[in-house]
Length: 181
Image 1 (tube, rainbow, N blue to C red):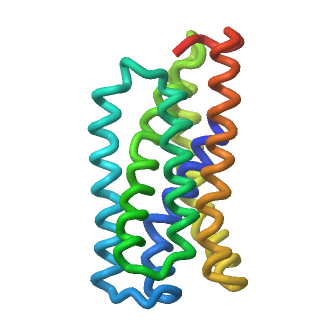
Image 2: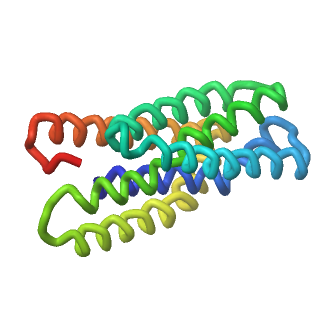
């Protein structure tokens, strides 16, 4: 889960900091339009967390994470190639929904995988979040020199890594190799 948190926080940081610039430079959005896109992203993170609060006890956390990460990857993949402002708004909102419960569920799942040392596990996961957040500006700086689309495509790549890691954890939990969550 340590690496899943790194890649997730890296991906979210790029969306929250670099995508408005991408929309302004590559899609000719005005400042207000790019700001609205970012507002929709955060609004749907909040809405998604509310929905997750309702369903979290009924559905395994790993299943929720797999589903919403696939939603985020799919929405953002389509988003970066579109030019229509309204479709971009809809897809950035869907991306926000896909990101909504990832961080809380990654932290809660990762910090409860083992009985002993849960405080240490949680601390390690918060260290991982700061590594991901800190890495985003450096990687974005170098990749944006190549291409704007290339730089934002790391959002999907990192979320795909997160999805892969969560699937592994889900399989291990299902096979009783880890504690059931």
